Image (cartoon, rainbow, N blue to C red; front, side, top):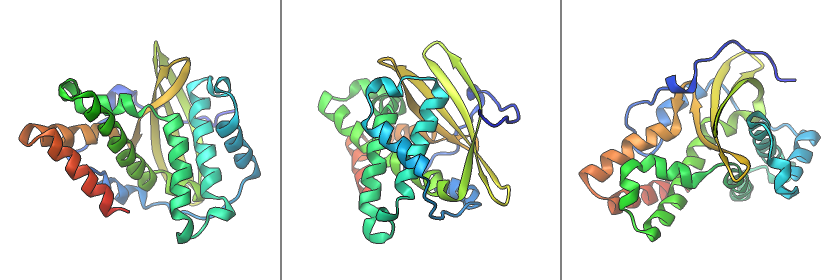
Length: 237
């Protein structure tokens, strides 16, 4: 049964921070209240296997169940004894990336992040941008949320559903009672719920990206935007 939480502000009030350089690093100051620590959960590993290997119908459920399955699957990877250490970082990233690509609708997110600029891209450019955006979002989400899962407990608050959209409120709680609110926005896609944005401490990751993308395209071009994102990703290898 979900842990009760205090009423949270609706998604419409989630704010977007100031323009950024293709990351949300300023939010890490808040997130550093937590530190990762290895912890193996047999239950989480079982859930991860069910998510990775089960039929699509196993993922078709309430939005909160979708978020819970995703976080449990990621936790299982991050806490897997065979995937610990810097030598296994690439393997961990690939496993987590696969889970995220299954759970997140990166095409819808990429399209929304470009706004009206999306329609002006060729089909090839759109496909390229979906890939770039997915990698960029994965890196930010990993820095701000995923790396803290091992040393935190995720509590689930309310979920609100309207037509084809939903918001699931969660909180990362550390042993010292520090809390980090993390809200998930979902959309219905082909009978499944897909995550379409994450707000950390009230700041929308996708919203921050959109502000910077729009500025770059207006002052330069899409090609320049793609170049800057590729450079950013290369720097973080």
